[in-house]
View 1 (cartoon, rainbow, N blue to C red):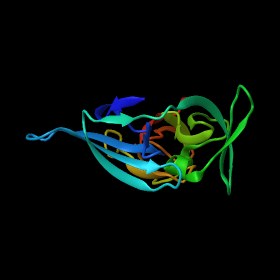
View 2: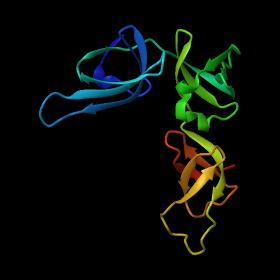
View 3: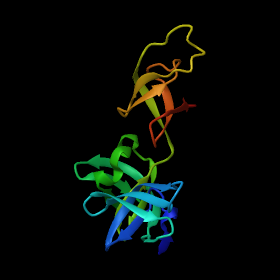
View 4: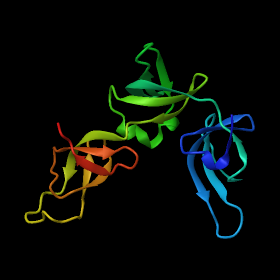
Length: 188
């Protein structure tokens, strides 16, 4: 299916020269003078090579047909990550380079959206937020209640983030999976 380059977004899959590419980042640039362009960074699905392309915003780009389905995360081994289709109980193995840095936020039985081309997983979308426990942070400083500064903390998945001063070790917090930033204290 052909679409204009300016409509391409992160996570889309593009077919170019007979190969499939997953979009890592897409930016529309409108210079003061000249033609607006779409700067698209892509990763070739077959071998993981990253390329950067620049299209005029009105150029036609071939968008691959992708099927998105919910899958349940099972486990990780040396071959990659294993997911199960909750309807058919079919298991799918996803290579580590497809999951990428999002691997730190995967939790057992988490429901994720897998994008498949034919039977090959090409990209993964995690829930926006995930609840994790703070395993290491600085102690609470008395009287520092109205401060807007964050202190460093290490979460149970090993990711470092900034948390408000009132958060202590053992506190469960909600973080954004996109960038690991603190959202709120968990309500459980």
